[in-house]
Amino acid sequence: MEEVFVEDGAREDDQLLPAFNDDHGGVIVELKEPMEPDNFHSRLKASLFQWKLQGKKGVWIKIPIGLANLVETAVKEGFGYHHAEPDYLMLVTWIPVIDSTIPANATHRVGIGAIIVNDKRELLVVQEKNGRLKGKGIWKIPTGVIDQGEDIFAGAIREVKEETGVDTEFVELLAFRQMHKVFFGKSELLFLCMLRPLSFEIQKQDLEIEAAQWMPLEEYAAQPFTQKHSLYKYINDLCVAKLEGSYTGFTPRPITSCFNDSISYLYVNKQDLTRRVLSPN
Amino acid sequence: MEEVFVEDGAREDDQLLPAFNDDHGGVIVELKEPMEPDNFHSRLKASLFQWKLQGKKGVWIKIPIGLANLVETAVKEGFGYHHAEPDYLMLVTWIPVIDSTIPANATHRVGIGAIIVNDKRELLVVQEKNGRLKGKGIWKIPTGVIDQGEDIFAGAIREVKEETGVDTEFVELLAFRQMHKVFFGKSELLFLCMLRPLSFEIQKQDLEIEAAQWMPLEEYAAQPFTQKHSLYKYINDLCVAKLEGSYTGFTPRPITSCFNDSISYLYVNKQDLTRRVLSPN
Image (cartoon, rainbow over all chains, first blue to last red; front, side, top):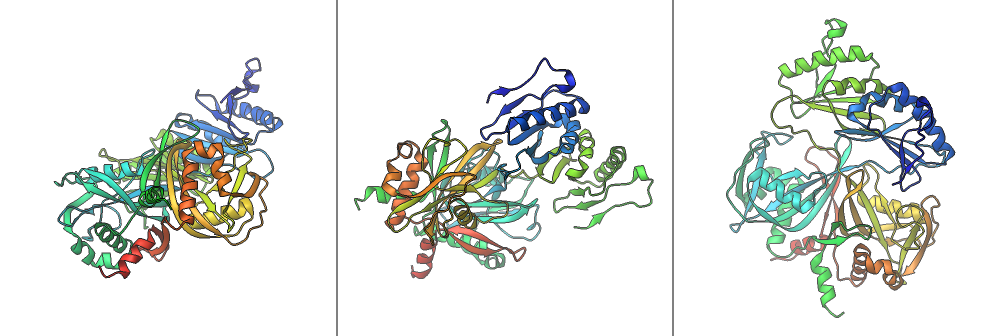
């Protein structure tokens, strides 16, 4: 990003805000130094006029939480909120009259449900201390939310270790559920992952977990709640199908981007793709 | 949610803020009426003291954008930003000394890539007006970001219609990619969906699409960019495998929640699950 039009010679109250061009015909202002709201106001107005003349589209202002006294000024100048993280608030406005192409905020959190069976056909299950199942005596697979920037398979392994103390390795992603209005109007993607246990001793985490155990799969399936709740029933069906070797899910394969050197993961039905490549037809 | 401890008899500056209990031992304040920052400050301080005595954990304050003048006060009292949407900012603080279980903000946006082949083995492809591939002459499958609350299969059908004018129906989800740091440090899940065309005439959208056409699959595969970029190569492999009938992805099946009547979708390898249920072993 190249920095544009900082005018050092201008009078202080006419100074423009330092801004960077983005890849989409807009500009980004990242406020860092404290300033008086009045000073910010005059600089913002002068800058907006300039950007309008230059045909800029989206204008982004990132305000760190330490400069919360400047938020009101930006809002009064027509900026809306775009998103916030613990340490900053991002505001945006769209200059042209034509359709805005401001990208959407993040819409989903990503959860994992871990299906782990030992060689006695016992499923690793927990009872939770909080949430809707609290105090109901229902045994469920360990679930959790993956961290910002965390890969699904890594998050599954981490959550199981944290909640139950059991070490695992990733086998396959068996299914996923998309559900809306799960928190603050946002959606959730819950990925059901089969993991292979590498250790068996349970050390439950006290903050969130009431109890944890290895439970015969038949017992899990026989819980009235499992019978009634279709996701729990599917978990049992998927588990049995996978143990019988009659089900194939998705496996992560590393892929590189053409734009940088970072590695991401494509989850595919590897068995079907490999079979195809190996067989001559 | 039950409303708690609004004390009408208290002096104005000692009044507590109206708050609702959440399901996790915390309280939620939704500001609606304008008030002076000083008045808000004294009420917030009195309320925080009360909540501390009551053993409350997380305290949430939702401030509509019209009351942006109150943001600074909440920050000065120790609140951090949690998330923001165009019309409000959510702040949160954690009262107890022990580990916070404040849920994470949304971390992912969800994109779709649409793989659509007609009966001449031609792939529906576009060139984009913006972004990194702008002006490079590269043909790619239509992609887009799904809307808040939109199902993946519905978003795929909508994006294809918007970008190319082609009507489609959902066939199967072939694979997905998880990629980090795609926008504002957030991650993206890109779902590759195979759709069946129901109409064939192309009417491209002008805002984002430079050109659109049905392109012989071999031509798509032969683009140097397809050869170089592993995701593009996978798209070709998946497409060919699917056309040959040698690949099975995931299909959405409706499931109901035990907590309410809403329907969500579980994406599974339906073929494998059905085969298992039908066969006696």
